[in-house]
Length: 460
Ligand code: AMP
Ligand code: ZN
Image (cartoon, rainbow, N blue to C red):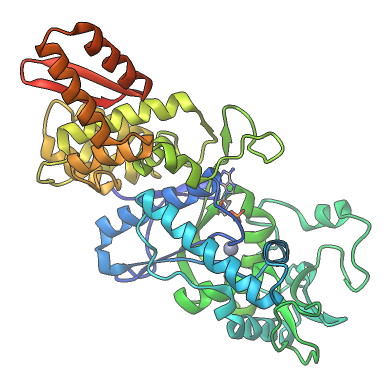
């Protein structure tokens, strides 16, 4: 069976044919590094990690290039830096914020079992490429300079006979309707009310770089141009897959396509546009004000990363996902089972019953159902299939201690109490033995007595 992927632009599932099977290229929009990543941000990380693993399985590890950027220039970063490090010069404070947040992001996504992308470009290291794309756009008449800004004109792109794709095609919007519906308080320097910023002046003290297009004052890039520049540098003018969350389709990805296609006179930027659905928590939209805003970091204090990974993959990537405690508990039980059965088994080839649903637009819920079907049968295929999906990164023993670590239970203390209880039982002091059992239960530890002795696990 061949790989088929759903493309947001053509709105259909199509067979995946890479431009170059020796160099399959994928770009995914990465985090803006100003705060802990939340569990919604983990969704594209996990989803596109599964796709990366699947592509490597199909085309070979050396033939897939995955680029996920780090946005390290943004107003939110500047605001956070000024708030958290008021005594430092702004640029130094910004470096601290982006370095700390970047490190935390890596720690989080490593724990989720996500492979590092082939390249993780930083926006601030690609200002030269941004300037070049902007220069090209101005020369070709798709962008103009006004009051030290450079603006892109979607109307210029949609003029007759440009031979270019239509602005609005990706998000399925009509430019005329966008023009009619635009806000009235548009910045006065904009010629058209849908024009968007490619470059803008920096305020005093803010990060700034020499400007393109003959602008004297230093400035900084808009958000959309960053991804066009980084994708171009690392993947070229036209590549295979571009991904991100569904919220990025408009305006971010619509504007990326516009910039790249107009700068390089291309019909397409990426051949497949893939978008993951949104995540909500206990049936509510996640937000700071509702108090249901959960970071990956917080969840990792209570659950091993693989539990979060499985919990994410139980839902198809294009559907919305409802993140619940109940579902997390079930995911933890499933992983216990898989670790017990397959962690210490030499992995075999992934089972066809697991790979086939993945080939059908990453149908992970069906792949997981197939994994359950393998439980009583070919354990080597189960182990190989689980590894293909990024599970079983630890041995069974490490899994137990990771669970204990995440639960905050001190394994040494548990062993000591169990030894005391065994001693109490052998001297028939059942009052003391019951007291210790209750104490362990209060610590969240369940014990089981058998002929071989007493074993324990974290009670969920
Ligand atoms: P941001 O840092 O907000 O640009 O988001 C980084 C990535 O996370 C983007 O691909 C977003 O589409 C994605 N994302 C943000 N919030 C959610 C959510 N609640 N559910 C799913 N994906 C999300
Ligand atoms: Zn982007």
